[in-house]
Length: 284
Image (cartoon, rainbow, N blue to C red; front, side):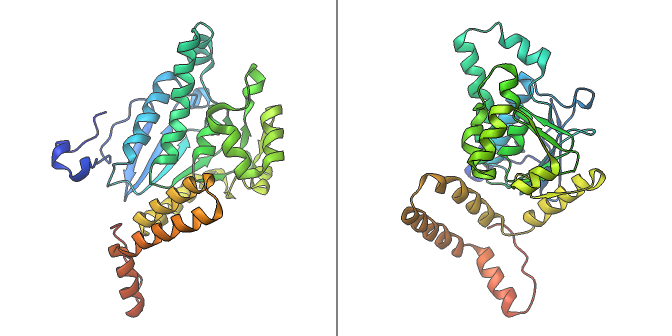
C-alpha cells in the first residue's frame, strides 16, 4: 500500500499517515481527522469484489498505525449501502474454486471484519437503502450504525444455500440484537427494515436520507475531537471483554484506566475543569 508519508524508519513505531491515501476500489477522503470511506459502484448498489475486499482488509489493518485518522465513516454512494459480494465477479468464480481456494477467500472476507474490530478508531456506518450479505457484515463490524427508514438489512446467506455464519455473523449479531432475533434473521435471510432495526438495537438512530452522511460525520467528528487514545482503549475493552469473566474484566479495566490516567489528555481535562474551560484533547 502506498500510504506512508516519509520512510517508515523515520516514523516512531512505524506510524503511518493515511490522509493522502489514494484508494483504488472505493472513495476515500480525510477531513479534520475523520476518514470517510465510500463504496462507489452505485449503478450496482455498491457490491464488493475480490479486489475491494482485499483493499478494505489492508486499509483497516493500516489504520492501527495511522496517527492522522481519529474516526472512520463507512457509507455507500447513491441510495444504497452495499449489496454484498458481486454476483458476476465473486459468486460465479467461487463456484469454480477448489476447497483450498474457497477457504482462502472466506478467510480473507473474515479478515476485513477482524481488521475493523482491531483498529483503534471508532467506525461509524451510515446505511441507506440496501445493506445485504457482506454489506450487512461491514455494518455489523462497525462500532456504531446510523440508518434511514428505507434501510433494508439482510443477512441473506441462506438464500444462496450458505450458512448464516459468514464473517462472524453468529458471534456479532446476537450480541447486538439478541440471540432469538439474530437466529431469525440468519435462518430466514429476510430483510430487517430501518424502524425495526432501530427498535432492535441494530441502528443507533435513524435519519432522513439526505441528512444521514452529515449525521455520521458529525458524530465521527465529535469522537475525533475527544480523547482518542481513551476511545481506542474503550474499543479494545469492548472487544476483549467478550471472552472474560466479570472479575477478569474488572481487572482489565483497572489496568486500562490506569494507563489512561497517565496520558496528557487526562491532565488536560483536569486543568480545564479547574479553569472552567472546555478541554482540548490531543490524543496523547
